[in-house]
Image (cartoon, rainbow, N blue to C red; front, side, top):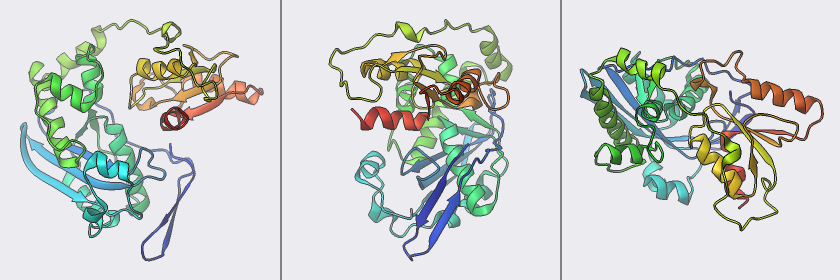
Length: 327
């Protein structure tokens, strides 16, 4: 879902208004498969939220019979200058973007390139959400390609990694990384990591799926996570507050996110109670048992809010803003 209104002021003074009120993304299926033909995608953006951040680069690599067939890459001129953090993170500068084509010019080329391919990406929901919203807004086009998330696969196949960032996965698989946070380079790294993983299973999707059926993970009790510091900011909004998580987080594991909470003096719970102050909502697309678009935790939280409980529901990105901007 996307919410709210986004106002974009173009350089020529024209104004674009995006009405994002309760837009449901009718995305394709999240596959557990090991195809030999697919297209890798990656986008670089000005931030984390498709409701108001913009795409500044799109990259894609078409793969046929496990070999790179062709490539697509384009910078995208945003409606306003990018900040220093994004320049340092991506290496993309405002000077580089000055004469880049607009998103409305790039999107049709991108769609022609990917056609109806299965899409592969690392944390691909992030990329698809940005692309879906922009394609819907500018072209009235619904991005419905089925997709494979490398991060999802590696979390299951390599569960003992410290984290499942693309850099960590590549280092674990002895894959050299160049130009990280540039779209085409990240596509290439994702392709190489996927190929190593797929060869482990001899490209046998049934064998991969058996891991989902047979792997039994120990449930994580968030109440047992302890703070790594005793130096708390008692003015922080999370200090001495009870937090619960639901859905699959896209940037951190649930344990890592819970550690952020307790390091700020907060407390984590496994389920919603009358003590709960914050419910942090991740991505339900990973959760096959979700019915009606809402988890049982989210439904209970909404019920308690209607009953007058002081409980706030936060998106994953809003949670990170709360953590980082109030330290």
